[in-house]
Image (cartoon, rainbow, N blue to C red; front, side, top):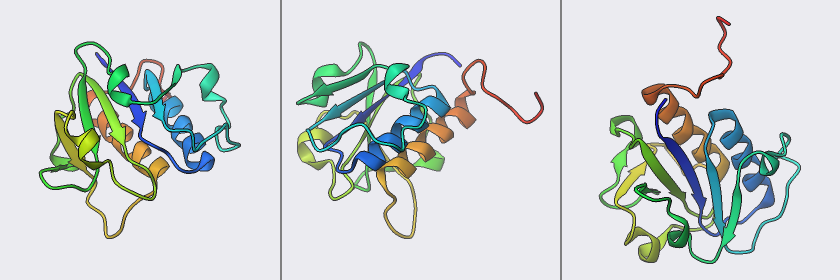
Length: 152
């Protein structure tokens, strides 16, 4: 797979979801995690201790850490968002996920070039959403080199 995925967690609420999101980053080979706010800490759900393997950056504004030539993609159930199953992932994407108890808001949406959502009957938690988006990216663009497969 060419390119990379970076993850932005906007004001994450619970350490459990942050830890599980970090686990997803390890499973699907995301290149970086950036988090805004201070409502989180290391969590037992990060069983791989992914923070030791993938850069985790704490910032006040996720916009400040968009990698060069990388497309910011809002992942939120908002007007104008494209359903994930119809979305063509960018080669270099910075996926921005909102807090468990809110939405990204216009402040973040204003600088995201693309918007996607996962069609569901009710809202998913942060970690589940990160898993689904990264899995969808891998199935459409190819899994990272070295990914374990059943036929290996």
